[in-house]
Image (tube, rainbow, N blue to C red):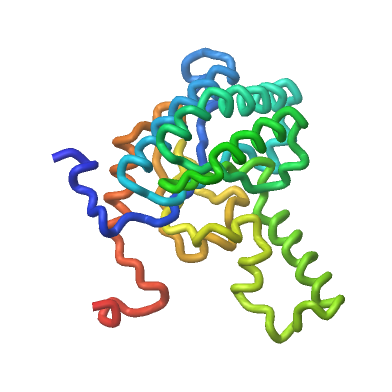
Length: 246
Protein backbone atom coordinates (compact mmCIF):
# COMPACT_ATOMS: atom_id res chain seq x y z
CA UNK A 1 0.00 0.00 0.00
CA UNK A 2 1.39 3.40 -0.96
CA UNK A 3 1.74 6.31 1.45
CA UNK A 4 -1.10 8.09 -0.33
CA UNK A 5 -3.40 5.07 0.11
CA UNK A 6 -2.64 4.96 3.85
CA UNK A 7 -3.70 8.55 4.46
CA UNK A 8 -6.88 9.02 6.50
CA UNK A 9 -8.86 11.56 4.45
CA UNK A 10 -10.84 12.48 7.59
CA UNK A 11 -7.73 13.64 9.49
CA UNK A 12 -5.97 15.82 6.97
CA UNK A 13 -4.31 19.08 8.02
CA UNK A 14 -6.66 21.91 7.06
CA UNK A 15 -3.76 24.30 6.54
CA UNK A 16 -0.36 23.05 5.39
CA UNK A 17 2.61 25.42 5.22
CA UNK A 18 5.98 24.71 3.62
CA UNK A 19 9.39 26.36 3.99
CA UNK A 20 10.88 25.49 0.61
CA UNK A 21 14.59 25.28 1.37
CA UNK A 22 17.61 23.86 -0.42
CA UNK A 23 17.56 25.20 -3.99
CA UNK A 24 21.06 26.66 -3.72
CA UNK A 25 22.58 23.59 -2.08
CA UNK A 26 20.91 21.32 -4.65
CA UNK A 27 22.58 23.29 -7.46
CA UNK A 28 25.94 23.39 -5.66
CA UNK A 29 25.94 19.61 -5.14
CA UNK A 30 25.47 19.18 -8.87
CA UNK A 31 28.04 21.79 -9.85
CA UNK A 32 25.35 24.03 -11.32
CA UNK A 33 24.53 27.73 -11.01
CA UNK A 34 22.17 28.62 -8.15
CA UNK A 35 19.70 29.86 -10.75
CA UNK A 36 19.15 26.29 -11.94
CA UNK A 37 18.35 25.27 -8.38
CA UNK A 38 15.60 27.88 -8.24
CA UNK A 39 14.28 26.86 -11.66
CA UNK A 40 14.11 23.20 -10.63
CA UNK A 41 12.41 24.25 -7.40
CA UNK A 42 9.40 25.36 -9.45
CA UNK A 43 8.87 21.73 -10.48
CA UNK A 44 8.55 20.77 -6.82
CA UNK A 45 6.01 23.55 -6.32
CA UNK A 46 3.86 22.11 -9.10
CA UNK A 47 4.15 18.60 -7.62
CA UNK A 48 3.13 19.67 -4.12
CA UNK A 49 0.26 21.89 -5.27
CA UNK A 50 -1.10 18.99 -7.33
CA UNK A 51 -0.63 16.54 -4.44
CA UNK A 52 -2.54 18.78 -2.03
CA UNK A 53 -5.35 19.19 -4.56
CA UNK A 54 -5.50 15.42 -5.10
CA UNK A 55 -6.14 14.66 -1.42
CA UNK A 56 -8.24 17.79 -0.82
CA UNK A 57 -6.14 19.87 1.53
CA UNK A 58 -8.00 23.20 1.49
CA UNK A 59 -5.16 25.61 2.36
CA UNK A 60 -1.52 25.48 1.26
CA UNK A 61 0.97 28.26 2.04
CA UNK A 62 4.44 28.33 0.49
CA UNK A 63 7.31 30.47 1.81
CA UNK A 64 8.50 31.76 -1.56
CA UNK A 65 10.53 34.88 -0.70
CA UNK A 66 11.29 36.30 2.74
CA UNK A 67 12.01 39.88 3.78
CA UNK A 68 15.56 38.69 4.51
CA UNK A 69 15.95 37.37 0.95
CA UNK A 70 16.22 40.96 -0.27
CA UNK A 71 19.75 40.86 1.19
CA UNK A 72 20.88 38.23 -1.33
CA UNK A 73 23.08 39.23 -4.31
CA UNK A 74 21.26 41.64 -6.63
CA UNK A 75 21.44 39.32 -9.65
CA UNK A 76 19.92 36.42 -7.69
CA UNK A 77 17.05 38.61 -6.44
CA UNK A 78 16.39 39.82 -9.99
CA UNK A 79 16.36 36.23 -11.21
CA UNK A 80 13.91 35.19 -8.48
CA UNK A 81 11.57 38.04 -9.39
CA UNK A 82 11.71 37.11 -13.10
CA UNK A 83 11.09 33.47 -12.17
CA UNK A 84 8.07 34.55 -10.11
CA UNK A 85 6.56 36.40 -13.09
CA UNK A 86 7.24 33.60 -15.58
CA UNK A 87 5.92 30.93 -13.19
CA UNK A 88 2.69 32.83 -12.61
CA UNK A 89 2.15 33.12 -16.37
CA UNK A 90 2.87 29.42 -16.89
CA UNK A 91 0.75 28.13 -14.01
CA UNK A 92 -2.45 30.16 -14.50
CA UNK A 93 -3.96 27.39 -16.63
CA UNK A 94 -3.05 24.72 -14.02
CA UNK A 95 -4.69 26.81 -11.29
CA UNK A 96 -7.84 27.30 -13.35
CA UNK A 97 -8.04 23.66 -14.45
CA UNK A 98 -7.73 22.49 -10.83
CA UNK A 99 -10.10 25.13 -9.38
CA UNK A 100 -7.32 26.61 -7.21
CA UNK A 101 -7.49 30.15 -5.85
CA UNK A 102 -4.22 32.11 -5.63
CA UNK A 103 -3.55 34.32 -2.63
CA UNK A 104 -0.44 36.25 -1.54
CA UNK A 105 0.78 37.59 1.80
CA UNK A 106 3.65 39.88 2.72
CA UNK A 107 4.85 43.37 1.89
CA UNK A 108 3.79 43.00 -1.73
CA UNK A 109 4.46 46.66 -2.50
CA UNK A 110 8.18 45.89 -2.19
CA UNK A 111 7.99 43.60 -5.23
CA UNK A 112 8.90 44.94 -8.69
CA UNK A 113 5.92 46.51 -10.48
CA UNK A 114 5.85 43.77 -13.12
CA UNK A 115 5.69 41.07 -10.44
CA UNK A 116 2.95 42.97 -8.61
CA UNK A 117 0.89 43.28 -11.79
CA UNK A 118 1.25 39.63 -12.75
CA UNK A 119 0.41 38.54 -9.22
CA UNK A 120 -2.69 40.75 -9.12
CA UNK A 121 -3.77 39.44 -12.51
CA UNK A 122 -3.60 35.78 -11.47
CA UNK A 123 -5.25 36.50 -8.11
CA UNK A 124 -8.12 38.29 -9.88
CA UNK A 125 -8.57 35.52 -12.46
CA UNK A 126 -8.67 32.76 -9.82
CA UNK A 127 -10.62 34.58 -7.08
CA UNK A 128 -13.77 32.50 -7.59
CA UNK A 129 -12.00 29.12 -7.52
CA UNK A 130 -12.94 27.04 -4.50
CA UNK A 131 -11.15 23.68 -4.40
CA UNK A 132 -8.03 24.97 -2.64
CA UNK A 133 -6.39 28.25 -1.64
CA UNK A 134 -2.72 28.46 -2.56
CA UNK A 135 -0.98 31.28 -0.70
CA UNK A 136 2.45 32.56 -1.68
CA UNK A 137 4.39 34.31 1.09
CA UNK A 138 6.34 36.96 -0.82
CA UNK A 139 8.54 39.62 0.73
CA UNK A 140 7.15 38.10 3.91
CA UNK A 141 8.54 38.24 7.43
CA UNK A 142 6.54 37.34 10.50
CA UNK A 143 8.11 39.99 12.73
CA UNK A 144 7.32 42.65 10.13
CA UNK A 145 3.75 41.33 9.98
CA UNK A 146 3.39 41.52 13.77
CA UNK A 147 4.82 45.06 13.87
CA UNK A 148 2.36 46.11 11.15
CA UNK A 149 -0.49 44.56 13.13
CA UNK A 150 0.49 46.33 16.36
CA UNK A 151 0.69 49.68 14.54
CA UNK A 152 -2.75 49.21 12.94
CA UNK A 153 -4.40 48.21 16.23
CA UNK A 154 -2.64 51.05 18.10
CA UNK A 155 -3.95 53.53 15.54
CA UNK A 156 -7.50 52.22 16.03
CA UNK A 157 -7.15 52.41 19.81
CA UNK A 158 -5.89 55.99 19.54
CA UNK A 159 -8.94 56.89 17.42
CA UNK A 160 -11.35 55.08 19.77
CA UNK A 161 -12.22 52.45 17.18
CA UNK A 162 -11.05 49.63 19.45
CA UNK A 163 -11.01 49.49 23.23
CA UNK A 164 -7.75 48.11 24.72
CA UNK A 165 -9.89 45.81 26.88
CA UNK A 166 -11.36 44.21 23.76
CA UNK A 167 -8.05 43.27 22.15
CA UNK A 168 -7.93 39.48 21.96
CA UNK A 169 -6.70 36.76 19.58
CA UNK A 170 -9.57 37.42 17.18
CA UNK A 171 -8.72 41.11 16.89
CA UNK A 172 -5.06 40.29 16.25
CA UNK A 173 -5.94 37.60 13.70
CA UNK A 174 -8.13 40.09 11.85
CA UNK A 175 -5.15 42.41 11.32
CA UNK A 176 -2.62 39.83 10.14
CA UNK A 177 -1.83 39.16 6.48
CA UNK A 178 -3.42 35.75 7.04
CA UNK A 179 -6.75 37.10 8.31
CA UNK A 180 -8.68 34.91 5.86
CA UNK A 181 -6.72 31.73 6.60
CA UNK A 182 -7.01 29.23 9.47
CA UNK A 183 -4.05 28.57 11.77
CA UNK A 184 -1.39 26.23 10.39
CA UNK A 185 -1.79 22.53 11.31
CA UNK A 186 1.39 21.16 9.74
CA UNK A 187 4.60 23.02 8.88
CA UNK A 188 7.14 21.24 6.67
CA UNK A 189 10.72 22.41 6.11
CA UNK A 190 12.96 20.77 3.56
CA UNK A 191 16.80 20.57 3.33
CA UNK A 192 17.54 19.40 6.88
CA UNK A 193 17.52 22.83 8.54
CA UNK A 194 15.52 22.84 11.76
CA UNK A 195 14.39 26.41 12.31
CA UNK A 196 11.34 28.54 11.49
CA UNK A 197 13.14 31.45 9.81
CA UNK A 198 10.62 34.16 10.69
CA UNK A 199 7.69 32.35 9.04
CA UNK A 200 4.11 32.56 10.39
CA UNK A 201 5.27 32.76 14.02
CA UNK A 202 1.79 33.61 15.35
CA UNK A 203 -0.04 31.20 13.06
CA UNK A 204 2.05 28.10 13.92
CA UNK A 205 1.49 28.31 17.68
CA UNK A 206 0.01 24.78 17.71
CA UNK A 207 1.30 23.46 14.40
CA UNK A 208 3.07 20.13 14.11
CA UNK A 209 6.60 20.64 12.75
CA UNK A 210 8.13 18.23 10.25
CA UNK A 211 11.74 18.49 9.05
CA UNK A 212 13.15 16.48 6.16
CA UNK A 213 16.66 16.17 4.73
CA UNK A 214 15.30 16.22 1.17
CA UNK A 215 16.31 19.34 -0.75
CA UNK A 216 13.37 21.26 -2.20
CA UNK A 217 14.04 20.58 -5.93
CA UNK A 218 13.92 16.83 -5.14
CA UNK A 219 10.71 17.04 -3.10
CA UNK A 220 7.89 15.03 -4.66
CA UNK A 221 4.34 13.93 -3.92
CA UNK A 222 5.36 10.81 -2.02
CA UNK A 223 7.54 12.90 0.33
CA UNK A 224 4.48 15.00 1.12
CA UNK A 225 2.25 11.98 1.67
CA UNK A 226 4.84 10.54 4.10
CA UNK A 227 4.88 13.83 6.02
CA UNK A 228 1.09 13.76 6.29
CA UNK A 229 1.17 10.16 7.53
CA UNK A 230 3.68 11.23 10.19
CA UNK A 231 1.35 14.08 11.15
CA UNK A 232 -1.60 11.71 11.45
CA UNK A 233 0.35 9.47 13.81
CA UNK A 234 0.87 12.32 16.29
CA UNK A 235 -1.41 13.22 19.17
CA UNK A 236 -2.46 16.86 19.08
CA UNK A 237 -3.48 17.79 22.62
CA UNK A 238 -3.65 21.62 22.54
CA UNK A 239 -2.75 21.74 26.24
CA UNK A 240 -5.03 18.87 27.29
CA UNK A 241 -4.03 15.44 28.54
CA UNK A 242 -4.26 12.26 26.48
CA UNK A 243 -7.03 11.05 28.77
CA UNK A 244 -9.11 14.17 28.11
CA UNK A 245 -8.89 13.60 24.37
CA UNK A 246 -10.11 10.02 24.74
